[in-house]
Image (cartoon, rainbow, N blue to C red; front, side):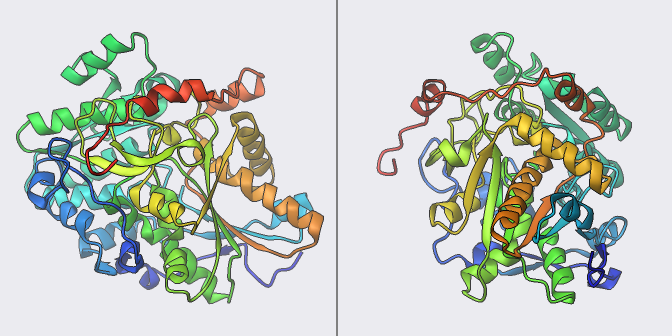
Length: 459
């Protein structure tokens, strides 16, 4: 086993990025704008400011500034857990007997257990700066809700979280961490909002979805003075904040003259994947370098691989702006799989545009295969991975085994978004043989597609 490259490559504190990288600035064909569902026209800053914090709106709409300075208060917070390590998976390589070199960027080294804190602290900072009382949000697996509750506690903001009902029930300890940091956590859909009651009436007994929870959180934000809505994925502002992942990963690899051949990330709404690939995709867009970039999604919620690239609502209640994205339809309720953070019907507009241009590819994998890969990784690398991250692990292992067959010495980088210590119910189901591999049929998907809005002159 070669020791030329250390197991863990750390940047120095002074090497933590001082600016976020705005990938859209290097895109010749920009992502399609958010549309007002009432007028069909692009959303203005004034319209978006009724839902989001003012400075976050500016970041959302800015598609020309390549680098946006990170405020000092956020830089100081980052120092508590950043830089995160880039790890060479020597033990996994040896176990697989592959000539491939495997690296992962580990984002689970903070109390929230995931990469979500990178954007949560930024959004809480801008809410505090604006003088707001608090924020509302949704959460799937609970990683985003946990991160936001931590960030709001730090800035003394009220935090209202609508947690997808199936995850609320599957992950009670994640819920309790949020409550420890002062958040008010409600299972969604609930009877506390008008849209929640409407969804329950239409879908009695539903296990919920991120689309449902978004609708409830937006309703509460827009009907309570001094509150704004914040989101942990999908939006351009979130991908911007998460670019610290890729910027650090690239800087660490550059230190040792390492160039990845392929970059792999799990994909639900796009925050982790967009953050990880940002500087590498920037090079690709500028024709400075080329990489194979792979998005991995659950076969039970296949937005990229089986979705349609159309304007659609981001939420089930159809009260949010319309986004052009690969979507299964805002009414699609995914099965209750254990990767709660990937149970979203659509994908980031930025990533959708890149995918549509053929600049990245996507694969859908089944749940039991994902957990088998997670277990294999845990046994040799010593980290229990989150179910979401394990989608990337599955494909990284597949690619490493292909290298074993062909003898190619490819360098693989994947994102380990977080830890799975609050996901032990899922691991228990896997070990007991009680985990299913539900894959929606074309007939299952059709009602969601049928409900996608028809916009005159656009689609």
